[in-house]
Length: 474
Image 1 (cartoon, helix red, strand yellow):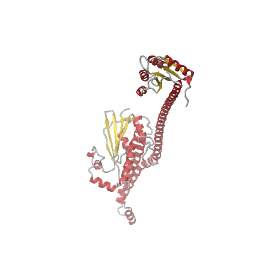
Image 2 (image 1 turned 90 degrees about the horizontal axis):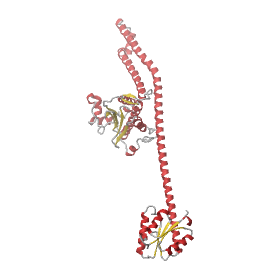
Image 3 (image 1 turned 90 degrees about the vertical axis):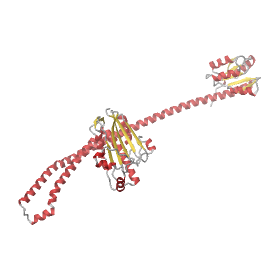
Image 4 (image 1 turned 60 degrees about the vertical axis):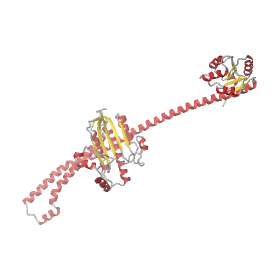
């Protein structure tokens, strides 16, 4: 660290005694300093404001305002408050010195003046002053550097968010494209053999009916058959066959129709031919999603069935991208099913104790709704419901928006999970079981692409609720 040389330092001497003034002026000038002079306090203040000296040597006893008052005014002035002041005085009383330090002086030189002492004190305080300036300069540079680093950090964070957003959008586009291609391929591959089976089933029914009629006519015409034919009729149980064969063909026809519906459902769910927004039946989209998830909802082995309760309001058709909205339904419903399966696993629920809970609880409104059409609009309280349940409720808000509430009576979420719920790549599932992008993509679809809202309510141990709100018309 370096300090300024004497030639670059300016010293203001303030003294009404010409002898003292001349002596100090000559000595400091010979030492290489640039020296300024003032004979009273008023002119000293003006000089200090104008020339900005590096140090002031100030006499205490002066006409007009004395040295103490002059120092107070210098320290009160923002332009001169940082200039160090050394008092020169014959006053040696401790109280006077304390007064001088209290008004802002940094040192005292006692008269009669000793030039070598003056020079030594001046150099010391100039060195301190210059070191202080350098320290202040370094602090300013450090603050500027920190500000730049903070700005750079903010820019990097913003860039990272944009990259994550772009990545999730690409992931979503790739995922939907892959699903669309898969559905188109599956539909194409299934349709050909399915059409062959379905078209031939009607002919098979017709032919079978004709054969059965022929057998019946034969039996009426030739009532007395040979023992061999009678044995064969008994072996085949012809009466049962005549009754069961049409039922079997009808069942096959129903199954073929069901496959046709599933293929159509897959195409409708992904809307692979519809990239633009169109008027959409939201309830149809929810029903399609539930149908696709039926294999996750039904009972398997000891795992009990997960019930889906629908409390649908009177919704108009909504102008939206149906494929994207269905993807949101899928993401939220899959998370609800996962949460309920975790609860089932951790609580040891099975079909047997579920039946016991169902029979003992007044909250078995799920079954009542399933069995009694008059209870379809009855509200189900998930907090009281003893069985794994998902409730889907829709309604119109302010005549221009709709809400879809999807709630479950699973385990709920901790506060830490809730804080990070919509963060990209955040997941509570085991490695390889989830990407952590489902809710992030859902948030983008609802909030950014449909100008809606996606919020949630959750209490650990008491389930979760997701609320989707979108405008009826974009």
